[in-house]
Image (spheres, rainbow, N blue to C red):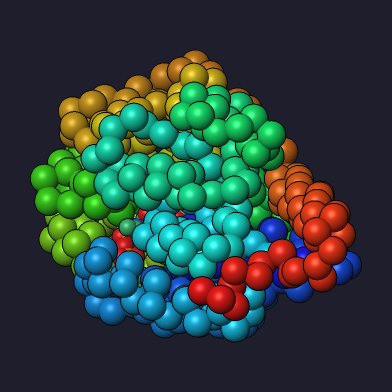
Length: 400
Ligand code: UD1
Ligand code: UDP
């Protein structure tokens, strides 16, 4: 089986990494990695952490890129890669412009698409924007749907996808997290290096880890989130650490509001090991990130989600996450409650995680192998019946 794994941003890379490693352990698969380079530095950090060397790099990133620029460049540069490699399946992850553009490029070439982390929905096309549209459109063209949870599977079935095309696998981010968390906590050299690197963290203050980057919050949303963080940082029992996303629409308001506060450390985006170390050290996490919402509960860290909607309500329903919007009064009230009320804090810091058990990648690879076997077998029996020679499963590739 020939598989092309395509991704381009930090979260996609983290979530594809365990699948790449699983394929590397599997006999009879030619699995190649094509990065679009929608992100650059932030993607390179993940590739380094997981020791992945891409076979193809489309290098599409430009400063402050527009969605259309990224989309067009990806389709244009990915098309010849699909043509040359002629994969049996193109695997995409999540809901970024890379995911949707790669799915579309494969679909137009007649190559089946496998969608990892399928079925996440808010029901609002503009929140998150443009991700809700990206993932819905990807579902339309995908052949195999890997749903992280039963809720995601139900959303796909409700949209009319056939039950045998949708598998509940857990989220591969948990596979990645468990892998790296073990290294960070159990490997003495890694642990010591990280302790040393973050020796400036105040031992006597509660660490509040912050991330934020969503497009629908650019402008007013970021102004509100920053003013909440500023108010929280006025307490002398906390320290805020915020690795700031490299998007200029994030950098500007964050540095303008929070740049000169003693209690707030604005740092560069972190490599995955360092970020996992900080999540582990944190008292609580304030974020609008999808991946962080899934990871924090596994580490027993309460997570407050600074968004109006979330496609990951499993954590909220399990009581380990709260949707606090971007209203500064609400954000501050929830943080204050968790800081001052040990019972409410303990109720959230349970370590219950609804997103996976660390075996998602294994399930995805197993399903793809069995899907490919069935497909190849039915293609050969069809050609035997018609008396013609068997065709490769991806024969549309060459003729596209
Ligand atoms: C993208 C995804 C979003 C995902 C997020 C993860 C889309 C539409 N958005 O948003 O779904 O949650 O990644 O972080 O696909 N930049 C750098 N270096 C980097 C990365 C980004 O300088 O390594 C800067 C560049 O100026 C770039 C800008 O950030 O143009 C925006 O990057 P882009 O990938 O378009 O959007 P994100 O906001 O990162
Ligand atoms: N992350 C990281 N370094 C950071 C911030 C986040 O490695 O400085 C990881 C985090 O653990 C999670 C992923 O990046 O796995 C989330 O990426 P992001 O928030 O950019 O995107 P989203 O998940 O919202 O699409």
